Image 1 (tube, rainbow over the protein chains, first blue to last red):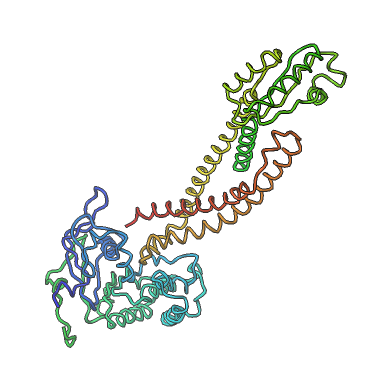
Image 2: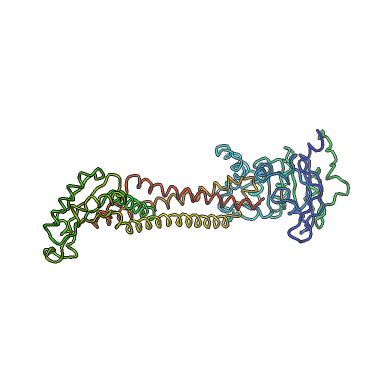
Amino acid sequence: MSVAEQEIVSFDNVGLRYGTDREILSNVSFTLFPGRFYFLTGASGAGKTSLLRLLYLAQRPSRGAIRMFGTDVITLPRERLPAYRRRMGVVFQDFRLVDHLSAFDNVALPLRVSGVREADLQGPVADMLEWVGLAHRADARPATLSGGEQQRVAIARAVIGRPDMLVADEPTGNVDPEMALKLIRLFEALNRLGTTVVVATHDVHLLSKVPDSLIMRLDKGVLSDPTGALRYPPRRIGAGE
Amino acid sequence: MPQGGGLALANLADRARGELAGSATVQIVDPDPQSRSQQADAAATLLVQDPAVAGLAIVPPESVADLLEPWLGTDDPEQAVPLPALIDLRLRDGADAATLDRLRSLLADAAPAARIDAQAQWLAPVLDALSALGWMAFGLIGLLAFTSAAAVWLAARNALGGNRDTIEIVHLLGGSDAQIARIFQRSILADAVIGGALGLVIGMAAVWLMGAQFAALDSGLVSSGGLQGSDWLVLALVPVGAVALAVLTARFTVLASLRKML
């Protein structure tokens, strides 16, 4: 299997600017491999959310090339993008729950979008809510949930479809340290099942919680990769790669 | 309402035009009642033998007096003004100018006081006005369809604005444009079906009432403007068309808005 076939995402000299402003991201190049756990760090305003928006296909870059799941998504017709979005789970920084839907229906949304039958989604959604400790709030609307509860609903929604890649923007920002660790363990469990995980965080304490993780650091829109590890990651011991 | 009015006026104009197209009136304008009566009989005898004439009827003087009663009163009108003798003529192939000229020549000797006029000729302005009203009603239908589409477009845009976050979330979770458009179509469909059903009931009642009012006028011309069975079917299809228009407008509006997103 060639490296190109293995890679799940590759950015090549990607730049992003809004209008005529200076570039928010400059010459960003990296490769994400299947089954890896990545942290994206950087100070506020470093461009983490912008980079994630490119990753979850909310935006096209101003320049450069992006390949995902073996396809050039820059030139891909927009009608074909939903199929790629369905392969990803996204935890938005502001949760972005649908206000008029219950916690249960918010978590069920990706499955419904993918055409899963109602009878087949009841069990998995209930299990997922149980796992994030919100089974008793299944019927609650987002407005009645606390910030931490909303965040857990958002995470449950992102992982319910067992995505190939999970992209999370500050997923532990509104939860206590105990719940933050629990969520990271959930991401790790997903990662062990083969899901590539990308977590943007400014919480440096989290980085040490996942020993095999790779760290991407953004500084003023420039990605630092001094060792080239983001392009050619070290093999996992015992991973058989 | 405009649909019903348009159909009624179109029917009225068509029927009246059809009936009048082959009709002509022979007037014997002679002050001497005896001569007038003789000329009328002679003209009828000649005309009934003509191959172009399908049938004729001499209008009884009493009927002529009845027709003129509103203007001349109930006294013997002959005392006031001499009334013409009238022959109602139905022609086989229409009352064209050549046929009427030939019939005038035919009557020139036997009934020199006879005047032949096509009925369509003197009713032409009325029929033209009815046609114009019919077209105006259909124009109004077009205008209403346009304004309905514009209203649905605005409603869909408002709904889009109010649900922009939801749309974006569903979009980012991998929802296709068609899926998102379907959600809006269903919402607009429900509203349009309720509105269409209400409009149908009210419209049908209004058109029925209008027909009843026409019939009450007791005018042969106006009462023929009623609706036929097929017309009621067309009217019943109007809300179906309106619902389809609303759903399509909503779909195109939503799709156009979604195309602005990646």
